[in-house]
Length: 296
Length: 221
Ligand SMILES: Nc1ncnc2c1ncn2[C@@H]1O[C@H](COP(=O)(O)OP(=O)(O)OP(=O)(O)O)[C@@H](O)[C@H]1O
Ligand SMILES: [Mg+2]
Image (tube, rainbow over all chains, first blue to last red; front, side, top):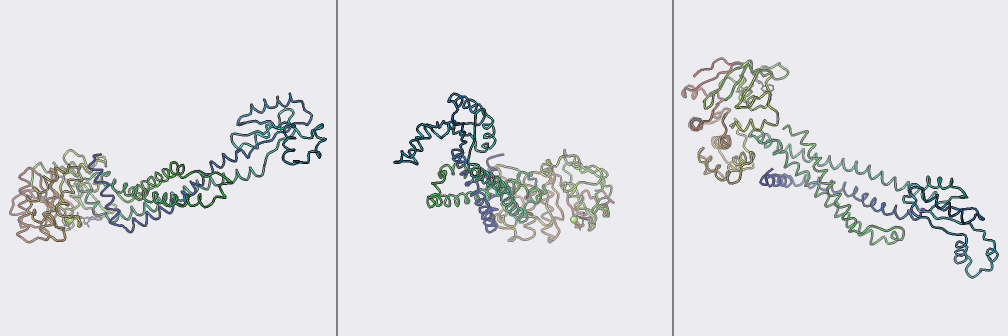
């Protein structure tokens, strides 16, 4: 393809866009809306990823041993836990240390109440096991239960399960949204290209009879679709940018709960993706119409 | 060179036979009239040459192209050998005379230098250079015809086909268009004229192919 042709294709594409300005605006606007809604979910999702990492730390499995078990066996159990896949970290909370913590936190200033425990510690040795992925908490705690000398395994079962379910739900619903809004945008763009092909049908027919190749006829419409998709998604990114900066500056209380990605991070991973997505959808949309209505 | 061998073309699943078992050869640089009553099949013949559709049977050769066997991708390259002057001109209404002609060159990917050089020459040749900035609706029928002719010849096709080039024109204008086509033919281009206008066909003493109900009934000089 020659440079001169590229210039011709692009100028034709823009001629199409401007010659039917109202229709182009409508499709750009509709694409913008679909991509904005879809983009909000992408942003939410990319925050969920970091949120998932953060709840990883919530998600500790506590492993208890019998009260009078020899330290040697506790140590041995640790070795066994270490061999399990997806175990990231094991922290020992010895019964002595646990008692100290109790003293500090619960019985501060009233040590005499638990003086007797100094001689007969009622607490148990415990490991806090961190996983590489919270998803496997159930499976791994079962495995740990089977290890010799382990008396009891505990974790915040309901809390973690519910959060994980929510995250999975959001992930899948964004997949559904990609398909839904992607399809809508494709239909919008392909419809406006279809109208353009109809308006230009005489011209296209003449081009065919004076020897234009199929691709020479097709390129301007493909570029037109890509431009509509690109402008629509760029506008969507602008909307999301302002919306997101508004949320992170006004919803400080959420920050205590989870850490948001910065605008920079969002920009580099989400906006570029949305932009490519929009342009890609524009190309697919126009290609569908070209296939269907441009009998070349 | 154009060669038709036992070509038949029907419409509507065979209920209308537009071209019936037609054979002829048109050599390089020939000047040929194709005449016949309305509905005789003249336009169908032209459309077969342009490969707007395929014949139901028979063989068509245009230059080095076997029209029936060639791949669809090559159709534009077949058509670049044939400049057509359509009866309804088929000019682009929102482009100027100059642009209507340069458009034909752009489409086959000529350089803008070539375009700037060639288009004025061709407009001069068909005698319309003083109107190069006008739009088709500002032109008379005869002038539009000339623009259409300019577009047909600008890419130096081997064959020029004119469908009813004198259709709605007065005698003088028709005569000028005919002279232009004769001149183009002298420059080595095969010219095929599809027409009703018997006054020219008789005078010009050129080969004449006469169609009746889709068959050739006369082919003589
Ligand atoms: N697309 C079509 N579908 C069905 N029948 C057609 C079609 N095109 C042409 N015909 C029929 O085929 C026959 C030949 O038509 P064609 O257009 O070739 O005639 P023509 O000689 O060019 O006539 P005219 O001088 O009026 O232009 C006519 O009977 C016409 O009705
Ligand atoms: Mg006809």
